[in-house]
Image 1 (cartoon, rainbow, N blue to C red):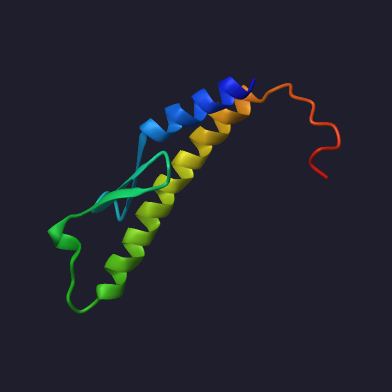
Image 2 (image 1 turned 90 degrees about the horizontal axis):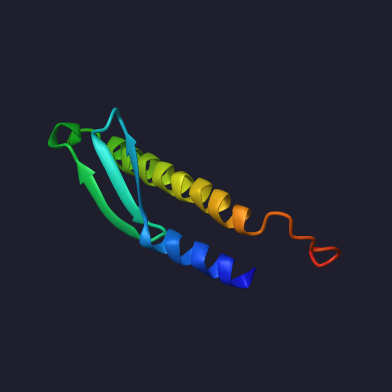
Length: 91
């Protein structure tokens, strides 16, 4: 059981996840470990009169990538622990 959990964690750590915002003008890529790898901006989104908008789009794209990673982790690691009876160990 523990070996399955470790294998699932290692598989997730090797994956990358992408999120986007603003119709794809901002893209963020993270590793399965949660490390931010890159943020790509379409130059058209950069408005010197509204720098906050770019920041908001970056945050939205990173959060979307993170949610994708979390969903994959829950599916993978949750599957590895399916059927496990933890009894009173959680509380």
